[in-house]
Image (cartoon, rainbow, N blue to C red):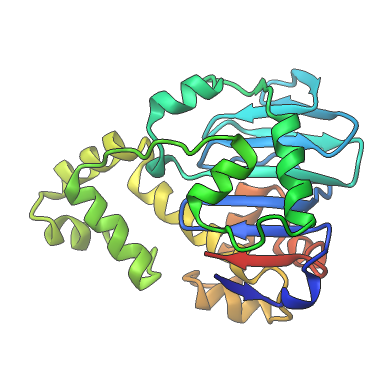
Length: 262
């Protein structure tokens, strides 16, 4: 396990667990505008209620929401802090998401509040401080380990190369050539296997890399270049599109956040 500015915050109420396939966030919600994760996610309130507004203006109230990938939404909470689990779509069998209660078309109330809150308490109390890998996060907050998705080996190799090189600007042609596919066949197969268009996948993964640095004192313009953006304007636009917050707001709200990496 790798920790980032975390050792002095072991009992902090705000923390984030990061593996290649999961993000578990326990911290300030802030006031995000419309956000669109390219991955299924679950929100749980620590107490009180959540209000989720879907595209079109319909608002529901519950203590847990299941939000499918690409569902634009706005989330509000009675309490300042919330719990949020992001599940990378290429990492989990789609039928498992259906069994968890995800609707492919729209956010729906869920039944994971008790399990999430128990996992949160156990983490705060140090009952399982070292478990940051995907299986440990699933077990702690979902009560089960989600079955992985069986990707076509060629697509799996491309994704592994991106992760290994931390390069989410790899050209589609380069990726297609690396697995002996034509460009058109590669793009079709990638979308089919991951439920995500290739360019969208790259953009989401770039934005996800920001989370590893969210509690650091860092120059945002330099960070933008380091994680693959051509300039600060593209960086800010992308982050606001996905998370509903400016990068500066994310960093401001994460000053006391403990980040643990697998």
